[in-house]
Image (cartoon, rainbow, N blue to C red; front, side):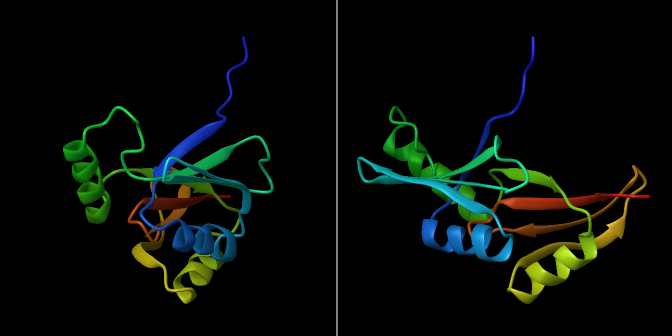
Length: 137
């Protein structure tokens, strides 16, 4: 039995800002942009992984969630404590410079980790943590 990752979901509070970051700064493709019942889902992904998608969704997009829980999700998103995604890159320092130059919210500058990677971290415009790891040679 084969199991592979297809989608992961990140809550965003402004899809246009998220698209500008993921597409224009990180170089991802916008694969889908769907509106439904006043909400919007945008799918992005790396051109190097056409079968893996990141879905940018509104906070608390579940139709069964209560208004109070939706508000709590929006508050957690604003604090930057909801989600995160880890990426690999072949040049952590160049990626760091590109994202920082674009105004990215730096969490951690590039550093060598004892577990065999050089990595850095940013928050996307919605506050989600993104970590970029380059395997040490």
